[in-house]
Length: 183
Image (cartoon, rainbow, N blue to C red; front, top):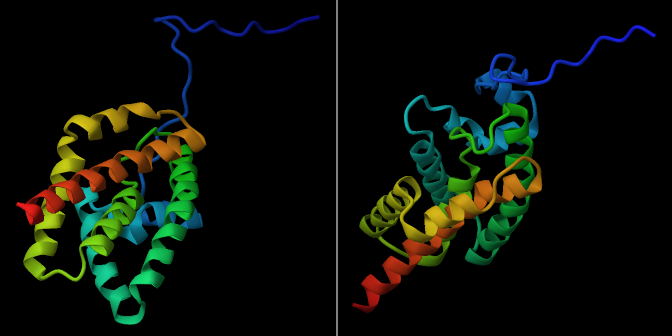
């Protein structure tokens, strides 16, 4: 029996890994999960896709307010968390990255939660919430860094990890806003 030996990975013979997929409009449109996870194109921004996704979330929330009650928006957010878990999981696996920066659905849902809980609020207060959330999400102080390190990998655990740190950043943002209002 003639069999070819499987090469053992060594520093001189590293394991072959499939290349990382860079998102594009074609990639986004190739699967419904990609479209959702990439924030309907906002995650394709070449500069600061997380900020672009948060801006898209802000605009989408303002539009939702025109047609939906706060209770209905809460329902949209709840469904978006479940659908987002699926979309982020699938898209990260297809991109072959644990937490791709282009996946922005985590920012979208987290910022919707913030706006849902602080509204009604004027434009200045909404902008302050935006800035606070972006700081917590980008800098990842204390609890946000802990949440970011907690769940890694592919599959549902990794998909949850993508969402979790942004949910903690949203909580921190809401905590600062609440303390500001009390003070």
